[in-house]
Image (cartoon, rainbow, N blue to C red; front, side, top):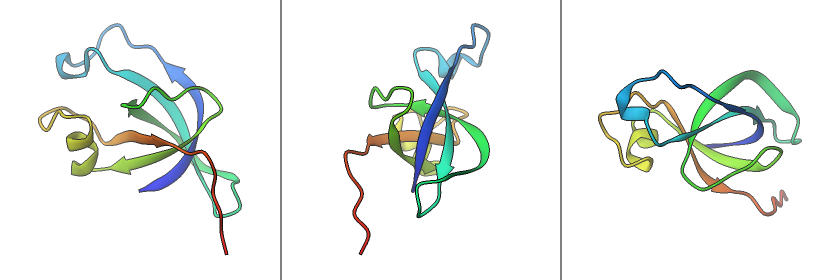
Length: 88
């Protein structure tokens, strides 16, 4: 799992049937200093996150199980909205 910032939404009217009903959000991973890094990534949203929020993302088979669709083509799922982060 890692922290990411929601930077936008993705609308796809034509998609795999196993993705129907999911809200798709565009995220970027956050560094330990809360700086956005890396390429944007499309994530399935299971918690009702919105643009600008810091979220917890899980990947791989855990992402499919978190979305309750073990057979869906899901690689990244938002599983939490972050209220605060304390380091040290």
